[in-house]
Length: 253
Image (tube, rainbow, N blue to C red):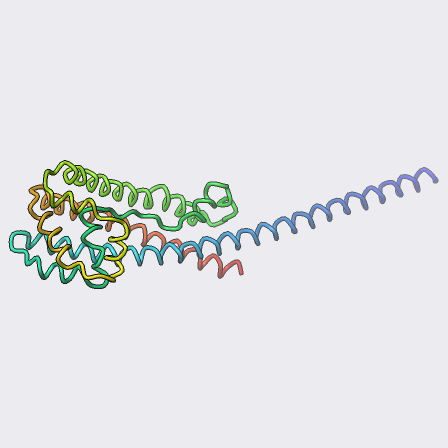
């Protein structure tokens, strides 16, 4: 009799221990799932915030590039009949004030603030996202859309650098004078603090005299088309991801 009671007690105590351990594991899993869900929501919110920042950058960059595109198209279409005085008047005003130097002497880069999304992909935090479409879209965004923009921006920069070589090898004293422009003078000019109309007119006349200048403008127009095309695709992909993230956040919060 005592043996049976001891066996029952042993079985009961064993069951209690097993149930206790099972409950403990269940509670731990519940806590882990809760923590994971919180981290996923935090990650999704970080992605959305980063997308908003990138979109603001693209909007600003697109406005600048559109202004330059209009200026380039005007130069190309009217190259042989340019009214340089009128062009200079435009170049001294508002958003066009930097166009001459950025078009012929400098270049536009593309550096949207993608560090948060890049970090989420590279450090493995992307694994926290349960929505497979969002994960694939983020990877495609960086590996394809963003990369395509950068490749074409790089090609445009390389084109500008070739034209720089033309300027450096020119024997024109007028071109040499343009290249001697100081950073202080550029700052004054870009801020519109001083009237540089005559100087800009002389610089523009010197550039237009160069035989390669027109070809450079036409090639830059062609390359800029692809920059804008892939930048718009990048922007559209961002918007699609933001919509997916918004839906996911509605479900999870």
